[in-house]
Length: 337
Ligand code: EPU
Image 1 (cartoon, rainbow, N blue to C red):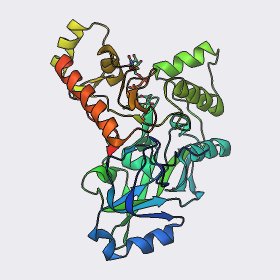
Image 2 (tube, rainbow, N blue to C red; image 1 turned 180 degrees about the horizontal axis):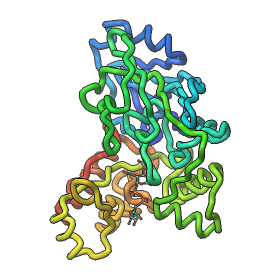
Image 3 (cartoon, rainbow, N blue to C red; image 1 turned 45 degrees about the vertical axis):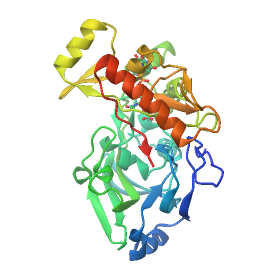
Image 4 (tube, rainbow, N blue to C red; image 1 turned 90 degrees about the vertical axis):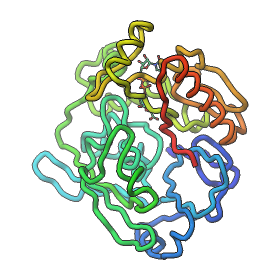
């Protein structure tokens, strides 16, 4: 299954925005990637690495090179007791990889099933869903330096993972390209069913001890009941991050809005941005050719021939409104190009 929606000139992005660049290259092999990156001329202009284009919004012509990674390969590298070290090429489709691991009896990725995008994007964005994040299973990341092609293996700690965040979005942005990811998986299956929407779905299906496949299939069902399928409706998944506010700020909001959805975190409370946006009346609304998805207000969708400018206009209007109503600053999860 591929999640890419081809734009008019074939630069894939799941929002389905027609995107252009000075130069667009598809790379099918890691050696080819390394050779391309070794060319110092590459860093004279901006360079963008594209996996599935599932988290990007193109708002302008890209004045440089877009490298679309399609290198493939998954292999079991080492077994240490219960631990299985599995390497996957950056260009593998994430969901195909997750499903393949389940079919092999390699456990630990089940909760991340059905996330659009590629393996190479997972550490950059530290993708997460249903009670886990990619960082929980990533052992290390092999990346190549732009302009030299020199290889570096980043340990999990060195990746400095955070909520939808890593070093590849900060200090190393535009400097390294992920070639492959090494995952630490397990022979033993220990289902993680703490996420409420997930435990509810399992109990209403009468499942108490899910098999890996039952767990993955239930998660995929919960996911697709709320999120648009990329092959049907253009979007970039969650457009905003769930904002974190101080405990005092949360208490004030809770007093005004007793049904606010929030989760305690180390430095305060994480608010459900979808709840804030819905409460502000945006769910299902459309501005220009971009809309707020009817079933999940965190997702902005393409209502047909949507441009990057349409997306930004709607995102800015929502951000301003949430700031005014709740005093909360929404941050974009999607990467704006
Ligand atoms: N909610 C609303 N209205 C909405 C949406 C959500 O009131 O329109 C409230 C509901 O009470 C719901 C709660 O918010 O129970 C949480 O909603 P949900 O379970 O859908 O999770 P989320 O916090 O909105 C995050 C991730 C998703 C991930 C889900 C499930 C972010 C930015 N988003 O959404 O990730 O699938 O949790 O784990 O953290 C993505 O990144 O593209 C993505 C889809």
